[in-house]
Every structure is written in C-alpha cells, then in structure tokens.
Length: 294
Image 1 (cartoon, one colour):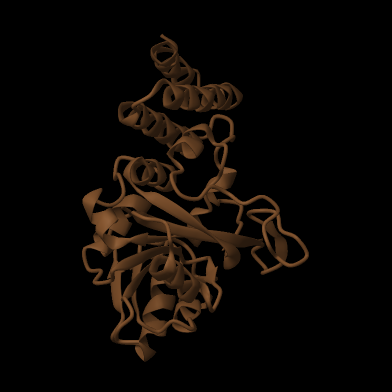
Image 2 (cartoon, one colour):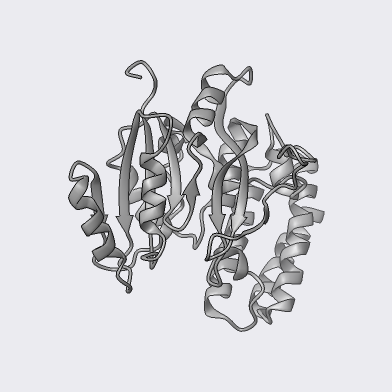
C-alpha cells in the first residue's frame, strides 16, 4: 500500500449531526487504505461539532477544522485543501456515504486508464432518503446495476456546456495537481461543481466508472431542491452563481459550436429565472444571449 498514491478525503459538515458519523465510518471502512481524512465543520448550528469531537476521541490523528463563522462550502473546502497531502482528492458531504470499494475503483481507474491527461474520474450514485431508503440511481441502471446510457468520457467540455451529459459530482475523485493549478473552488460562488467541471474540462479529460460508488442523501434542504423555489433568497444566490459560471464559460470558449452549446444553457437559465420570479437575473441574461448569437 505504501507504493499506492495517498488519497485525501475532505468531509464537509454543515448541520449534519444525524449523518456525519456514518459518513466518517464509510471513509475508515474503505478497502483502499492509503487515505488521509480531513473533517471540516462550517459553524453548524446543530450538534455536529459536538458529535464530531466525540467521534474523534478514538481517532486523535485525524485533522479537524472547526469554523468560528459560517464560510460556505467553497471557502471551507479550500481552507481544508491547504492541509491536504494526497495526490488525489474527494469532496465528501457529511450526509453522504462512500461504498467500501469506492476509492479502490477510482484509484484503479486513474492508474490503469488509457485516457491521456486524465483529471477526474466519476461513477454512479444511489440516491437515498433521510432514513436510508432507496429512491433511485443518479444514472438509470439495468438489473445488473450497469448504466443504461453511459455519460461522457474523455473530452467532455462541449457535453458539459450544453448539458448533453450530466456529471455525478458526489462520485468523483480529482487529481490534486489540477485543483492546485485552478486554485481550488471559486469562492465567489454558492456552489462549486459546475464551475469546476467546466474549468477542468477545458484542458483535461474525464473518465466514467460504470459502478455505484456512493450513496447520496436527498434532503429537503439539498442543493438540488433549491433551484426552482420562488422568491427564495438561497435560490437567488444559487442561480446568480450559475450566471457567473456561464459568464466564465463564455470567456473560456474558443469556437462557435461551444458558444451555441452555452446558448442552450442560457435559455434554460432564463426560463428558471422566470419561474422563480427573478426578473433582475432574467434581464442580466439578455446581453449574454445577444453576445452568443451575434
């Protein structure tokens, strides 16, 4: 195991007292053992910090970062990343659960892949409820748990821009040197994954692993449930971040085909702004649409 690369798993916690111990044990129970765990609590207002501190009594060697004020996911991840020593990194939410062979499959893919310039590997996820009940899979699967339609592999920049293929962010592992090159997450954003995929995909390749790697918990306050809430401050913040991400993507684009792909996403976001009564955001998209068209 000493010859295998070190993997850093950053477990980010915010009000996950009910789930964090299960999440942390899923890291310790990995079949791949060369793992560094870093825990960061973003000033939870429940008993998360107390729960983590008690759990750490049996694991005093594990690094624990406890924010005195709430910084948000992007800033907290970057803060933890500064302490990471691994060659590869996983961003693990404290309400999600890694399957026992997750890291082993991800590392094996990195080490054995025929795809050059590989920066991110990702797989499927089982979506579970607050009570661990199965809801669905991120990508639909056959009776053998193999995906019915494989998502993008290789150069996926165009696929991400136009949403022709979705990336399961919670099942991903990122090469550390790529994160460093990009200065981690963009701290001006309310969420991180779409922006990271676009910036990485501009110059690097991805590979999909056809296996369920993680259980992703779907809660009422999960990010995916926030995009279409009407007159909601968090929804406005999230959707404004998408606007900033699209502006950054346009700056990265090199071809008319790429601009056309972004135009499709712009239209989707304008519809979203209408449905959430965010007229100011809708108006902001008009100059972007004109720029992409002409």
